[in-house]
Image (cartoon, rainbow, N blue to C red; front, side):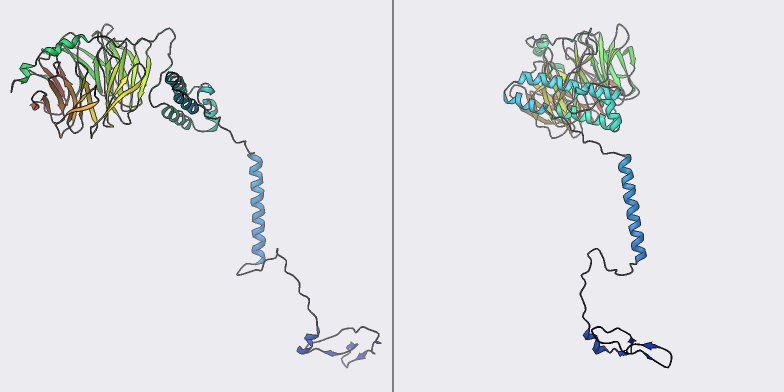
Length: 505
């Protein structure tokens, strides 16, 4: 039973104070029972939204600690904001080159479009070379692209290099020109395409000694290199042969005697191709070191080294005028080099895989390429434009070449399939299975009656076109990498991975 005291209001007179035996004084003694609680009036107080009910094991001490931690985090964020003030978002200028291209195409202004493409990509390539050299270049070289000095502040140099290369590859898929390095060295002029090939008279001859059954036999074996013979080149007028090898050097021989005349060293990797200048006074070589070298026999030294390719250079071919040389590479591109101005005049883009061979049609500005994307292409060397593409191979095309007349192409692929193409009709004429081993190189006899292929099975394949018969010449101890006919078409020269050159007559 609870007891307490309270004062009574109203006009009533206060009662007299009473005193208990224990000395306690009180005004009035009241007994409060449970039933009497109903006489009190209770007022409902609304709960404050900011006050949360504690649940679980949370306590006031934990809540205080949490609030203190939040305050510390807010102070840290404020300090970071002071140290690193907000930078304005950079706005990239509007890309107008695509608009210009579309406008020129819509208006049919193709010559203007070609000029624009040339100048635009020239700027991109100059920017790319500047980055690779670590130098600054004009900010206006590319659309929305900062100078090299700014890129070094804002991000890694590798990112800037990747951006420039990506822009260069996406903006120009066909060709580009590089600016001349020296104004005193003038560009060469491409000759007209109306000249007559003087070698067409050789097509009247007949390879009787090679056509006779069993008439073609190995008559000479020359051990020319310790490692594989990767390429062959015959002097345009003399009985002189050049062999290139995995030994990073080339050698010059007199044939058929096999006396060595000269040796050239300078490449940093294996040789992949070689080709005589039309005058016979110079030699071009290509290599796995990504370079093309020009050797002058009079000076007995390398006079030029072209270093524009990004990957292995597979082969090369001289223009008949002798002022230009074309090279093909695993970087999916073909480059045309100007000997006089010593620069790249065109980069031919269109293949989507390694370009494995390149050849100028004699006395013409037409180029033939074969690639690992299973296609052959014809190009105009003056403009760098692809004129025609041949589809039909199911495997990587390793080599392709013209006949002397230039109206037929023969090609071979990595499964040993030989195909003949009609250039004028852009159609397939003949397909012969000489596999299953890869065909590494293929050539026409001057009469165009025979096709010879270097096979990876160690044999030389000879296809007689009039009869359709296929013959194999065995003798190499390893894969045959390259083949050539002599100028009169009387014998075949083959080079193999066994380091030998063999003559077949």
